Image (cartoon, rainbow, N blue to C red; front, top):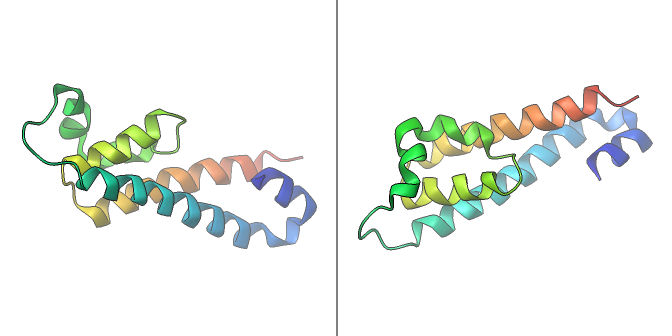
Length: 104
């Protein structure tokens, strides 16, 4: 949808890039918030990757399937929400920017 919009309205490049990044980041932060609702009894060993790498691993939040799991894990681990949002947005921006610059 993003690529189709840019193809139809190339003059709206930056607006589309920012809106897509914002919308996708808000979706990731929703997953993060849902993760915070999970009671912290004992942390699963499956969360070790996120624990070890911290919020920086959220730069991969744009990836299908893995991205949502990373966002939820960050919430479960109670990682800093502002740093989480920054790294999520950075990865998502890079993804949309790459799509935009490779359009014919």
